[in-house]
Image (cartoon, rainbow, N blue to C red):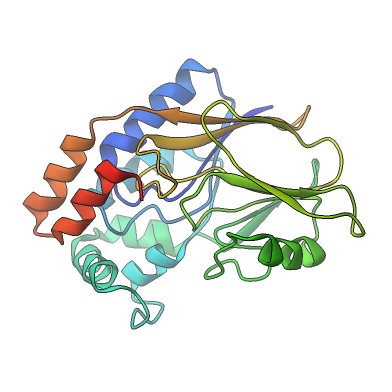
Length: 246
């Protein structure tokens, strides 16, 4: 089944719309969202309304929980905390109920795929950005393949078995992988706030039958998303970083 894996939308409506247009062009059968639909961006309710009708699996992320007031934001950066409080005040009752229904992890047992916002060890907080952390996650993950978000970096880690050396690669647009063997930990990158040097919206196209995947990037009107952030009175830094991809 052709699947779109998306993550870290962060209330960026133009980016989400552009990705979903690309997903529809590819004839995708289902959409899995790894969390952080809100936070940072200016269109939380609009993004949530769209995702309700489009996602087959949808997880909650740390910024979603922050917007609900369910986690401590004292460790957030100033701009992230300010955005979380702003979002908390803007969420509609329907949006609050939507986020409250989401879980922290999910599994596709048919294909041995686990889904987490952050990592198999810590679905909410852990940033898997280096080989040591990836190996720790590969050691404990129940499924052979894990899909994670949170870091906003499109990349993957893999090893042939528990005795083999783990390798990692940043996944540029068009990168294709085959996950028919070995263990994998894969991050599709961020829809709404990429941090891997490519400002375009990111998503992963995954065939759950062949276990082949391709990393995709989509142009979107960054100016529109940035203007919405500034108009909302959110920190200007959140608008500026969209142009930089970090």
